[in-house]
Image 1 (cartoon, rainbow, N blue to C red):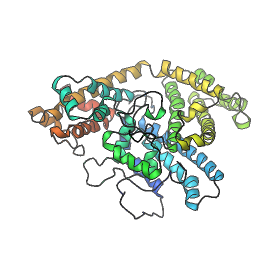
Image 2: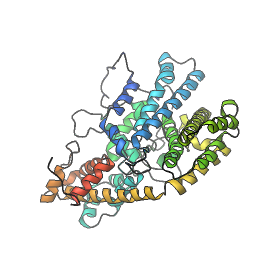
Image 3: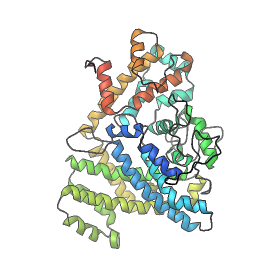
Length: 461
């Protein structure tokens, strides 16, 4: 791969268009950011769980605020890396310099905005609830599922993946005549595909690119077209497996930095962990720092702050800034492997040994004290029950569309999620049901769950 081909302003839905849209105010890549942030799919993230239950008396991060903060970090990473690339390749053409110096930050920020847009309600437990439902199918439902769907299509549900669903959310037409979904640029779309493999090739150990899946059976051709345009390598042409686009590593790094640091901030506000714990874990990153990043200087400022929440905010900001600089340096050090498609770990995993050990301490503490906190476990269990029951009701309606109850249930599905009721289109119909449920907010999922199960009686509005 080469930096000259890895960016393109071409958009999905405009593959056959030769005209280039010009806007005196916004560039093509800035328009990507705007299309995502003004979309209803993005707005719904405000009521989707990040880690801790919503809503509560203490405001904690949801998927929307998390995505906005990741986009902020991603923009900084894009700017830092873009400047380094321009500095190294000074003799390139004007459009090359223009993109990497001024547009790459917008691409990475847009990719960060969209990285969680395909996640179902209730955090990662929502993904697992979808997988569990299809893995536990029995009787006629299981027989129909296995007869009508190809192995790859079956694995789209058996190994449902929010990353792949994000790509679908951004590119699928959802019942509209216009093609291309959000009609984003190829550069932005490529930047969110962390695992560029289909479901049949994904979920295998050993390679980062096949750790999970990045696109469903229905979006394979879309990704292939993007990969061809951008020169993304395909190591094995017999399988739908590609190498990562280099921009993916920056989007991933922004997410890696944010959730590690900001989950601690939320946990502190909820009185789950103490300020002393955060101070000890975060300040250790500055032990070998110099000048602005020296521990003495950081600790002096920290000690002058009176409010505990402000203390945490200060450390959070300083640590994020430090990690941005570290990750940018790693990106440029690994340039050869990035362009060859051989980098098999995330950028943060290439930090110096001392900092990696500190990251591991944060990860271990998070698993023990944050991700397994009672409130988090409770919402995960709720997610299993709510999503599992909704899938049971609506999937049954799809495979038995003629029953009176099924007809009523199918009326509840928004028209953008087309359900044909035709046996030969079971894959598409099942996708529509999953699209409908995965797109719900936490509260809407609970509301529909209560109504279809008869727990609450709907009122006339």
